[in-house]
Amino acid sequence: MHPLYKQVETLDKRCCEVFGLSEEILMEHAALALCKAVLEKPLISVLIVCGPGNNGADGLACARLLCGVCEVKVLLPLGVKSPLATLQYARAIALHVKIVKAVEKADAVVDALFGSGQTRPLEAPMVALIETLNAQDARKIACDIPTGLGTGTTVFQADVTVVMGALKEVLFLENAKSVVGKIEVAELGVPRCMYEVPSQTQVLSVQDMRLPHRANPVSHKGDFGHVLVVGGEKEGAGILAAMAAFSFGAGLVSYLGEAFLPPHLMKTASLPPKTTAVVAGMGLGNTHKETTLKALLVESACAVVADADVCDMPLAQMLYAHEKPVVFTPHPKEFCALMKRVGLGEVDVETVQANRLALARQFSLGSKSVLVFKGVHTLVAHKGEVYLCPFGSPALSKGGSGDVLAGMIGALLAQGYAPKEAAITAVLAHALAAEAYEGNTYALTPERLIEGVACLKNA
Ligand SMILES: NC(=O)C1=CN([C@@H]2O[C@H](COP(=O)(O)OP(=O)(O)OC[C@H]3O[C@@H](n4cnc5c(N)ncnc54)[C@H](OP(=O)(O)O)[C@@H]3O)[C@@H](O)[C@H]2O)[C@@H](O)CC1
Ligand SMILES: Nc1ncnc2c1ncn2[C@@H]1O[C@H](COP(=O)(O)OP(=O)(O)O)[C@@H](O)[C@H]1O
Ligand SMILES: [K+]
Image 1 (cartoon, rainbow, N blue to C red):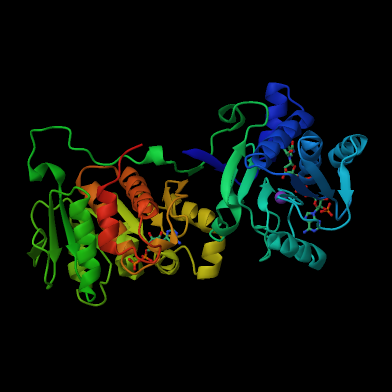
Image 2: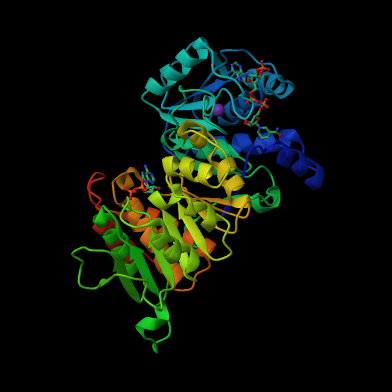
């Protein structure tokens, strides 16, 4: 995993103070990383669009470094303002870097218009400029942050974003995935791990996935836990969760309710005595009395995965306040209901989506439970720490994907994983299996997803 930061200005400052570097040294490394990204694919010409601040200064320094390597054109739609931009401009001019007055055709376009200093929406001329750049048939490289991201709807559409120093939150907004392209972190003169400081937010890596492994040849089914899935009105949802739990390693899986089940699942009318984890909420509706659910989820000693409808029941508050392992798995609308149920106020989906990290953290600070807040970037939050999954794909945007995830978490809880670790591994395995799916992007079914998870390997 890698730390994620709201802002890195303090890290830049610390880097200069602790390691004796200067802003100029940092910038030279930023510019070198941009050059590397530009030269990653063969090209003849590059257009570098530079803003008035230090993002533009990065672009101007990159133009200087590329001088003589390829044909360089610099566009400065707002002139230069910051002292470093003024300095880098003078250096570029001394090298006779070509300054152009309008967008010109090139093999690559570098967006060095605005970076971390963009705090307000783009005005009309800049919106028009970004739209023109997006329409170019060229490789597109964003310097630090694609211009417009986080401030409005018109955003530079990058193939690669070279982020300076460390990962920034804005690059992982829910709508950012379609504009950031591949994210590359530039080291600014010291190794990344020395530049970074501890953070309460982390971006998960493949290495954080710890799949279950049956190393001991002496075993029996009772060693791997017993999952109970509570079936409901939409019985298919519970069946998918149960199939996923079985495939992800639970020794036994029971289904509470009336349904035609695959042969490996056991039907039950009550809580089996040795149940270790209960998964409930998916497709639940009004099938069970609240007292029955309370007995299964709150009063039993079992670990709990509280999905979908359970997030909007009075017992959600009891689970939130519980000492035992509980993992909530809401999607955004369910998260709004859950926030209300646990007394954290009324928020709408739009507000929730714009503040996912902050709200997930707030939720996790009031409870011992683990939150799996599903989305394009699913979050796992526990005691103020938030882990973001950067993987997954639109192949998952289907009814049933979430049911599979809930069952997978249940399987790991049953096998003795701590709730946070169960959530992290299941979320990663779910997303990575979707990415590994080789069929058409529209064709992933929950069954195929379960099969994909079965074929994963630890990194
Ligand atoms: N610090 C360091 O050591 C390092 C910093 N580095 C680099 O510096 C970048 C940050 O630079 P920065 O702070 O100068 O901000 P930046 O993104 O250039 O924007 C500010 C300028 O843009 C303007 N502006 C903003 N929004 C606007 C809008 N909507 N419409 C119009 N204008 C708008 C704003 O105008 P003003 O608000 O002053 O009117 C101001 O002139 C960072 O992303 C990284 O690339 C790296 O080299 C590594 C080392
Ligand atoms: N575009 C996407 N990128 C990454 N993950 C996605 C995307 N669309 C959906 N998902 C994932 O698919 C699952 C959908 O869950 P949910 O909406 O609860 O489905 P259901 O209730 O129908 O099973 C979540 O884990 C979510 O993170
Ligand atoms: K930029």
